[in-house]
Image (cartoon, rainbow, N blue to C red; front, top):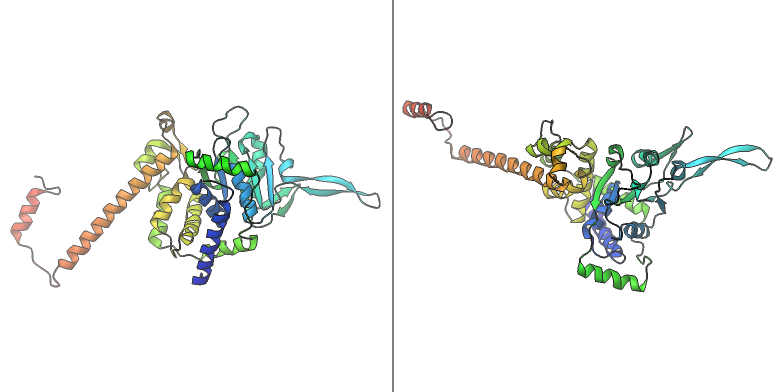
Length: 369
């Protein structure tokens, strides 16, 4: 069970992590917070943004801050799966006998930067599927366990179409978050230029080790989630399915396929970490609403009407949250009204006069004849 001391240590470590990252990355607080939350929760992150907004620099800084081995894979159209996972090569021993020896690829590291992941062919992209989900790599029938903690932080450019291959849904679903990296504002741009005039290298110091990161993850997993909060989180995920039990009008209008069960797992795991970062001992509804955007925006498949009207996934998520919030508020108001009536009701039974019953029958169910 998480103790007050462990939660205090968790908050102090997070504050130190953000302090060190800010030495290398100007602005982008939401992106930095989301990436750190996903890493503590044990998830992978997809960073999407135009070139030059600091995606690669952020990942390199995270490698320094967490003091973990870092490996960069530059995805290109001619990259092969063996270039990622590794392969068996023939070597000779001292006696002159030949045998196969496994040469590990760059995926055998703790932090993997999959730079411009959508430039590789689907065959090469699928080489990361097993590593991202099971944290193992299988080559020629032999499975090898990857070192923990293990993260894949991928970047992609959304504006280029030539020489790119969209990520399949199976791989998109394995990313806990999809974070949209926006352009810096004027003040941030001035600070970036001033900082890079001194040095282009990262200067952040180590703030957390791999063992400490695993301990933080263990602490976050012990945070309780109220049953009503958990039900709301699962309702939020189910509401993205147009044919589900909790389908909303927004999903029926704009969504073709909704989020998978991985979305519910990611939402709860990330919400626990966010609660601890803010010094709270439990998950709130606000945590779920804030994290719904990075968790759901890449897991929904929009229909033709949404594409034709240029409705963004974030707009759909916002409408779904508003729709669920309205229903939740209505239910709460009804319950409060019932409670109020029960408090005003006398202890003994009251006989209703026959005249009142007759009048109600004449009015009908909705007050009309």
